[in-house]
Image (cartoon, rainbow, N blue to C red; front, side, top):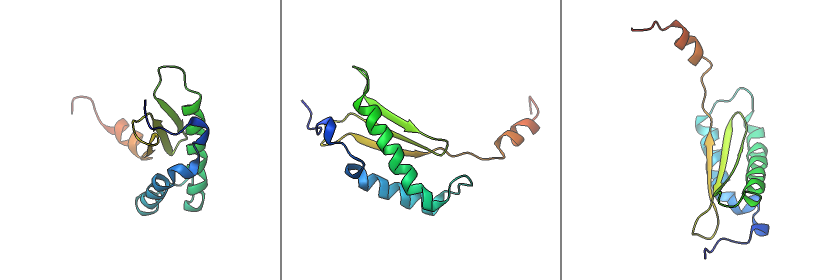
Length: 108
């Protein structure tokens, strides 16, 4: 039996350290034309809430709760620790990726 808290006690505040780390990374390294930094925290909190709901309502045998938007993916995973593991991933994209791919010729 794991030491995971009861599902009803999972809240966004339980993952505050992960949110702080993600926001620091966002402020230092991410340029997002669709979302200003002031909106990043509320968007992350909303995604963590959705991931908690997905985690709590997952089907038997599944180990993850996932929530995402175009910029961020949040994954909560079962763990043997005191709370689920929380991964926050920025979905990096370059608007130039398709243009480069189209200009390349097959075979070199």
